[in-house]
Length: 71
Image 1 (spheres, rainbow, N blue to C red):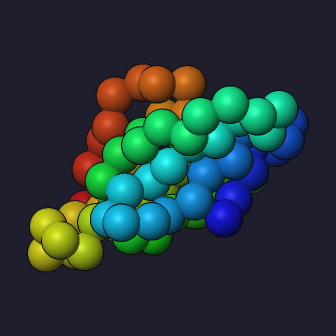
Image 2: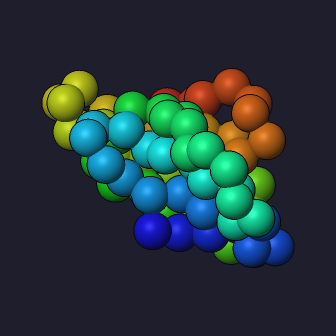
């Protein structure tokens, strides 16, 4: 489990997906596929590893921006 630097959003991995949960409560939503996740120290991006796609790594923007592959 990881959190954004401001502590407002939590992310965890379960059932082959990255789940986003507002810290204030509410429903969790599947944000992206993947089994591992790490947050950029500035909170702008998270790195995700999706083992189901032969180790495909990509950045996913926390603000909902486009995913970019890490080679």
